[in-house]
Image (cartoon, rainbow, N blue to C red; front, side):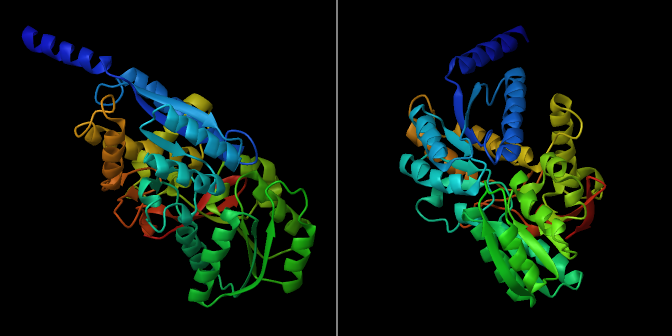
Length: 390
């Protein structure tokens, strides 16, 4: 018995003597997307504490290097280059679609696997030579547009207006939303754009009001998504207002106040985890994450965005364990990065907070609609589950 214990201690000491697994993280902790990026950063701080307490992965320490891109694409690309040069085995991030798209060239050139925390389908589709290295955890606009239009059809909506960001996020939503509307026989009567840093959208809202749509979708994220909705309310719009899953955090409710009461939006199921049916596949994992996050940052502080980061780690950790059996990052970093990419793509049935992930050569999102989307409404300053799709 003593001899066995001694052997175990020797092996553990040898494992700890190996180099740390360096994981690079890029998030938007400041700037217009900060309300999304801060909970992502906070989640990695929680993971760092857990890993330090429990001995890392396969006996190796894990070292997160967390960099802020300030909601700026150029800074996100610069951060990614720095992480690659520092020898990270993988990159997680970043928060926004434009910046994540900008990072693809860097990781593809260096052959480093990346898991994005942004929404656009364009980040991972098609899986070409560059996107071969890129995966993501948040639901796409295509998946969430399906939920919104299903809800609109069920409510008898016939005509729709759209106002979204004048960047890759807003354009992606416009494209997939319009396609889904056509498929279900609804009519898009007006489509407007605005910048994330704009302070007025009066002109756009007046053009929307002139077309008198039954419902309006705001294709934006974070607190800048409040501006069109507030302006619509101030100008007397009485129809239905939808937002995207890009607003599912406490800051949207805090900044929007009474102006966002009644908002309808699709969301990852974690947003209303306590209200989900007991048999919902992600409920247990989601409640575990919420308990851990609120224990450190306070009751009601969690958001779906931090959960995207948690899900990225739930995918990366077992992939790291499997890749370590194929290559040693201390001896051949390039071979290990390639092995890790293959093992991420081999992910099957990972139950996470937002859905059940099964990647393939053709699908680097890996979520099923019925597990990954619910419809929610803002009621009394809280999120209320109004329907699932199971």
